[in-house]
Image (cartoon, rainbow, N blue to C red; front, side):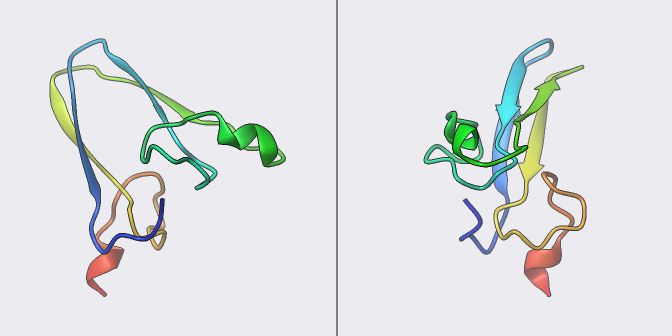
Length: 75
């Protein structure tokens, strides 16, 4: 999941729920695929869109604000 040099860009629609991987083990990044069940104390972030939007989710693993991209991949 954290092998990119850029963020994942995901479009969401108002009221849509998205399960964002927090353990880094997913095979369907950035979406949770249940692999956290093998990682102690890991759970996905459940995000509910308040409006139609584009989310930028960390793809490099360096963000101080995971799961959100903070531009750390540029450093």
